Length: 410
Image (tube, rainbow, N blue to C red; front, top):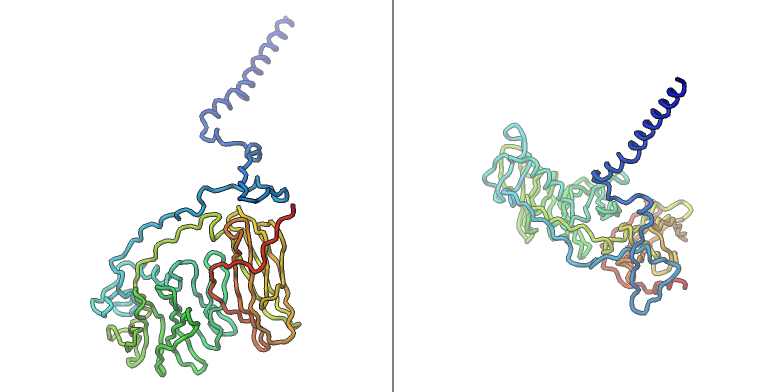
């Protein structure tokens, strides 16, 4: 009797082990065949993958210092860029939208000659158009208003890197900027030291600013460009005591009220079709390297702190060299490096409290800027009674470096 019970126990235990083995091995195999993730490589397999090597150019010898197995070549990296999608136009393009207190208040639209005033059915048209006013036509830069030393100043900001520099350094209060459709000028409003408001135009080609109009004891605001860039629309309370919509022809015309009304009309926007979307930069192309040169406030010890930053934004082409010059004198040279990010705090000692220098930063990588460096120029000033004021210099196409890039060690 005891023998039978022992045999029965071992039979039950064996059956249980067989069922357990089936659950552990057979069921996962069946699930793996039906799983959509069964074809993905494991982490260990992914780490063991090797990338094809970059073929050396003519006359170039492979260098053991920089393994080429980490380079992933691209097929025609500078081929035709992605085509921009078709821009959807609005039936109100070319008309002028504005705010008004008529009919209880709201958004309205009218023809450029001031006729056919009607409520704007889609408030989003006004919002989107207003958001585009400070942007350059290519969408990569915009002019912003910042408070500094108790006043508003105009700054130019790079959209991709958030790098910014003062556009104007004046004692005036500047606001309401609008970038021209051709990208060559910015219209804005400024209040001078006597409190007088005026409508101004800043030209990039000459660096000059022009006073377009100014009326005694009158408020002016919110300029907006016409689609062809030949006129500006704005609001003012001149001669009527009420905010009215005015237009100014830039080719020598006189300002005139578009639609004189017993209501207050303000903040006009000349509706324009949005610019075509810019194609995303191809990795390895002109946007594979970000270079910034930030100038901080001068210290009491007559030292100008500078922050240098060069970043591989593609993740494929490390920075190979960075230099900084002050008035043509080399003050920093990283030498041959191979880093995704190069950040260096620099301290430029000045002999006098008042100091001015042109700083030029150049950076190379093993991508688009392998032969010709990317270049950033900044004019920095130290003034005894004011903080450092840097003026943006519109970037120019990269030029060859005066000194050749060092050859990697064998």
